[in-house]
Length: 171
Image (cartoon, rainbow, N blue to C red; front, side):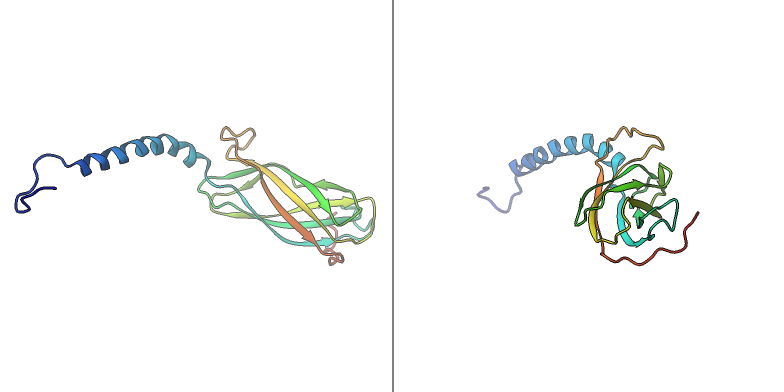
């Protein structure tokens, strides 16, 4: 400390030097990591809306099937493309499902969303409740692979044992 408090200290204080050192190293690290983070952004946000059932063979494109309706939001300023959609970890049922999706890639506009339908068909017409994981891979390029190698996004869905019948068959 300075014994004479009426006179300001001369030169650069140790505190100023320490602050300068503390800020210089993180600034370099953040500056080098920022472009990669900015390029990738956050991913799509799938929200399960509802499910319905096509009983028996009432719909040839969805035999004994369930339609699963989703809203996929894009909270980023860049267009997102959904490359693959898969279903796994099915529980609560003995049914085995064949899974189909709309034509890929699904384009989700920047700061927008799209509604989409995924279809799970079964060899058995029984109405059973089930849960499953829906996983999507995505990127910012219209065709994979995306150079940023984004992590897949998974959402868990639960379908009640007696879902409502679906609207008239589209085919």
